[in-house]
Amino acid sequence: MEKLGTINDRYKRKHKKFYSEEENRVKHRERLRRNTADLKERVIFHYSKGKEICANCNFSNLDALTIDHIEEETQPKVRGAAFYRQLIREGFPKGYQVLCFNCNRIKHINYKRIKNNYVQL
Image (cartoon, rainbow, N blue to C red):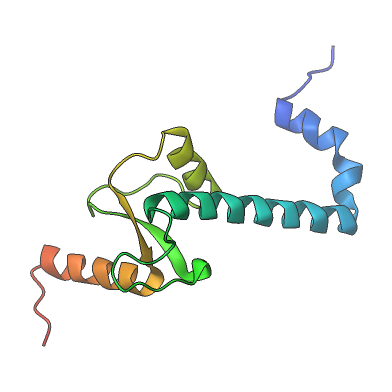
């Protein structure tokens, strides 16, 4: 008797021809990008209270906005679309804010300096 394999294996066999064609792979990647962008916009809209701006500097380019966990000790386990889906599924939990990439990076660097008792010259 032949082993059936996992669901993922059966899916791959079933759709092998579809994903082997370049046109279909491109369409699939584009659909994933749009889905991730939609999820990100929904999460950013919620955590910025409808303004879609950085909480620190008021920068408003959606491509440069990101979700920041307010408490540095709590790191998210997932990233990207999976992270956005998790936040939506959990009902937009507290403890997150919208920052631009620059403000988010500066916050992280300052946290590391304080944590390691590093003094900036």
